[in-house]
Length: 340
Ligand SMILES: [Ca+2]
Figure (cartoon, rainbow, N blue to C red):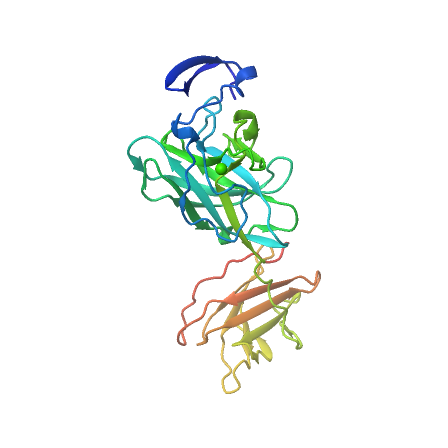
């Protein structure tokens, strides 16, 4: 990253000053937002989805808007803020990002919500989801909420860095809402211009910045896979290293197994009056995976547990339902299985 001296425009009290920026004075002259004075000192109370009941670091009013300082600008830019759940374990379920729009027209901004592991600086990327602000007008500040459930990011202790990644060069009127109130505790905030390979403390760039308009909601993690039924497992000579449980509709268990066509285990007895093929277990592949799916059955719920005898590891599969009896495979359920 270049830290050569460069010229940055600094707006103050209606005048425009040109200040030669050297690395040693970046902090003092780090002004960059187009909002400028006096707008930059006018608190704005945003609208939108504010992640009510969740975690935040701001005081609810945003006096300014911020981006990555132009001396560090990259494509894309990333800014994150550390947030702390109120209980553990906590799954990040939603992020709410406040965008402040400068300029005169407005527009919309595609952006990505990112989450990084806790630490003195952001750690590993935990997940990302991409969204769009929709049309926002100039002069407004709006929280945009988006589900983070697909990230499956769980916090066991401490905090999590939540933020956004966007292309500022193509969207120069959009800034992250910033809280500069002296009464707001200073949050841990970082920026990156290389997708999180290196981080820069935002307070070094913006000493007046106390927190960003980045909030989140958390919830207890989704329950783990259910244990196998309390019944004897099924075995098949085709898979001497594995054993199975198959359950239909919460109550009916498979009671016998037969070897069928190659790579297929036939489980019978799940319905007392019928003994038909309904689960196909394909594999193991060279990577050790087994892929179960439904061959023929009509049900609303079919579950398969497969246990690797040598390790005791159990994989659970909730198979897609078939509306009617069918000889057509619903598609291989390609899930993580057993390591070789
Ligand atoms: Ca404030």
